[in-house]
Amino acid sequence: MRHLIGIEDLSVSEIESLIATAEDIIANPQKYSACAAGKKLATLFYEPSTRTRLSFEAAMMELGGGVLGFSEAQSSSAAKGESIADTAKVISCFADIMVMRHFKEGAPMVAAMNATVPVINAGDGGHNHPTQTLTDLLTIKREKGRLDNLTVGFCGDLKFGRTVHSLITALSRYTGIKLVLISPKELTIPDYIKNEVLDKKGLPYVETTSLEDSIGELDILYMTRVQRERFFNEQDYIRLKDSYILTPEKLDTAKSDLCIMHPLPRVNEISVGVDKDSRACYFKQVLYGKYIRMALIKMLLEAAQ
Image (cartoon, rainbow, N blue to C red; front, side, top):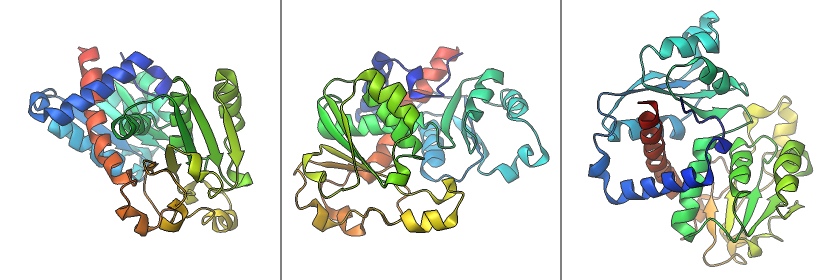
């Protein structure tokens, strides 16, 4: 049984195949309108979500399948103390594939170990978010035409940002990638990412606290919000939440073909004035997410037959 728990579960060739399928779906949507006919997707969301949950639901519907599930833990048997393992076994009786978002790192892995249908990790705590990474890779490919020879800046919360951790892991497989890691000292990239990905792969990177000094060299700027839900101390969140705010003025020194990305939701780290800039790609990114999830659902359902 194939699952997607981390982006490393997919080979580079599988990622490229998913991107190619997503691009074909964009070009020929009717060709895929019955790929999941008679199949059901279960969405198990123990944490709040707008884009990811609705993107998966829209993806399954556009493949001709059905959707069931819950959007908060309190509306599931988790409120009664049911374990992740038991939930996975139960949902396997009702659905052909399931997608899980959970506040605990490793929860989707436990589900995959107990399910008899494919499990997709839609975000586990501050650890992984592989389908956002696939979304990001499709966005980069569509907007820049390539996945290699890029200087990519990550700005904001690099400590708890699971989308950042997953995308760095994915980009480390491509040649000519240089990373610029922009964050307050309290929110720098975790040591395990430095040791297990950046240093092990020999990926060139610099760490800085200044967005203004770095923006001119970037091909991609990946903004992130400071995540209130990951902080134990409210005062630390308040102190750090406005560390970086991208404004139209800060883009004056940026490349004309810069691609500005954000996994969303946005709070105030990108001024709404930037939305009108042709370099703003974060709402396109949302749409690309639906197409890559369609490709992933199709692949995992076919693998399970």
